[in-house]
Length: 393
Image (spheres, rainbow, N blue to C red):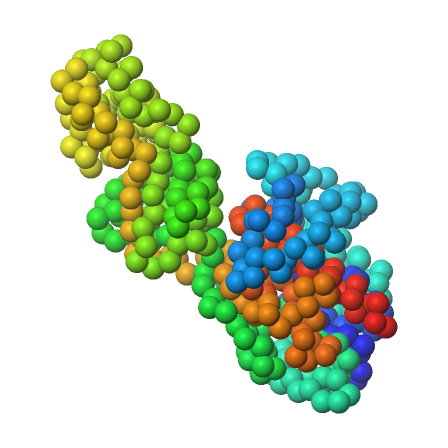
């Protein structure tokens, strides 16, 4: 059976492309329901974009590649679409936009747009083989007759969250058609630590505090969360995209406070207080107590000279840690890396090696920060491919 366009993947990018590619478009997905990563995102409310989305919020081998799609379909365009469908939303922090009610509203919106465009969706359809010839692409689908198309859009995502079906299929298709795939790694993922740090973090599981985390010259000011396996929270998820094995991260536990001045002031006001007690004025009490024990801070402030206070302040503002690893694709929100952009047209997302072949969304070597940026890339790249296909029809 022939379709003008077949899109593999009924996630954010695939559904967006289908809404713009025009009639004769078929979306295939092996899952039982479309948009599963949309459904679970943002605690079930979908952080669908960010007010500040721009090329500087993305990692890629080619940092310029995302500029075209992001500039031609912006966060304001998607917000307008959400508003047209009457979906209530709110800004949480740092420009992050969430649905007021449910992420399912975004899925329903995309499906309505897909239907309006005259596209079809087929679920539980596993593609077993793809070939390409002069007449386009031929796909073998389990329990179905062969399908043919002129345009094939790869929107199958990366390797993150394999329990939801992520498999790296996009990379195997890329290899088949001569596309290079950059190194792929889990991104936006909690970091794990060895026994020395776990002895501190395990008893503090659930404690959160605002910090500044730095790695490889990049810093994020957001919350840190202690876990049974190590560290998580927005600050850690953000920096995980920049961290590599054997490297260290530096944590400023008091990014908005002059730590030395605060300690000196506490000594002046009540020198008989224990150092750990004074720290509880600056940090969560459970963490302050654990930190004092870890560093042997059991004396009174009055008996602590300036040089020792400086050492304590430096330790609080530059806590250097060497993560043992990350929690991997099991909990990673996205995959860093992907199909290299050097053989993709940045305006259309079409392959420069195989006419009619497109790659969009997380499958591509474009990875956003935490906070709605990766969804915006899905919308922008899906729109770019879909409108390009429609224009060729």
